[in-house]
Length: 79
Image 1 (tube, rainbow, N blue to C red):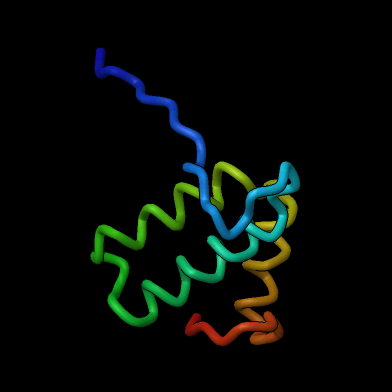
Image 2: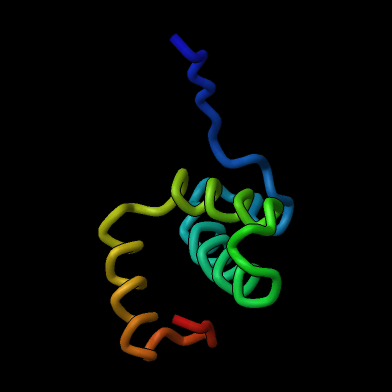
């Protein structure tokens, strides 16, 4: 059986407070900006994905995914 490694988002000095909602939003945006610029195969982008999946509520992610698909998300990304 493969070993399961559980990780949470690392400390980010830009978001020192306990409320991590801004960190969640930033990581979500950074992930899609990264894959838009470098492609889904660019491994460093996955760090942003790991962070937002760790910090963001699933409902938020689903809402933002819908907004991205509709082109109404506040930052620019390809769909």
